[in-house]
Length: 192
Image (cartoon, rainbow, N blue to C red; front, side, top):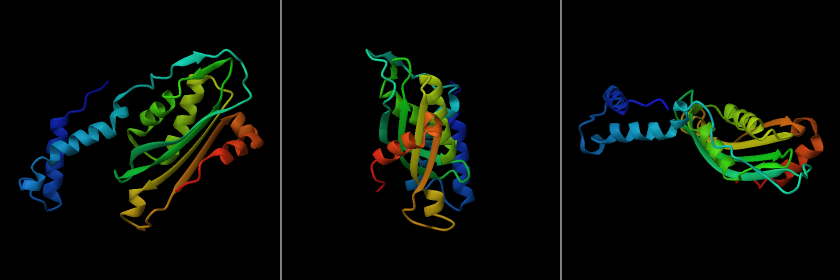
C-alpha cells in the first residue's frame, strides 16, 4: 500500500484556507488541515491499494445455479472526481453462482467500499463492482444498481435537492436474459 503524506496534505489544506480568504489560525480552523488530511486518507483509501483482496469463496452442498443471490441497499460514500464533493447512496448487487461456489455475503459490501473509496464517478462504481465480482466469483452473471445523491448537483450549479441518479450494469446472463434482469429489478426495495 502506498502511503499518503499527511503532513503535505495538511500544508496544502492550510494554503487553500488562506486562498479562499480564511484565517487558518483562528480557533475554529486550527485543527482543520489535520482533520481534512485524515478524512481524505479515509475517503480515498482504495487509491493506494492495487487490487481487491477480500473475495473469499465458499463451496456449497448443492450446485443449484439457477437462483441468484442479491445483497441490497449497501450504503456507500464516495468523492466526485470532477469537483471533489461527496456523493452517496445505495448499491444493490445480484449474482448467479456457478460450480457450487458462493462468495461470503460480507465480501460484497467490502467490494463496494473498495470500489467507492477513491475519486470517482457513479458510472465507474457501478461497472467496477460488477466486473470485479464477476472476476472473483466466476459467476454466470452479475447485476449492479447504484442510486446516489451528488453534492455537486445539490450544492452548486443547478442546485437540485434530493435528486437521485440511478446507474445499472449487467454482465453475463443478467445482460442476456431480460426475464432474469426484470426479476432482479422487481426484487429491489423502493428508492427513498
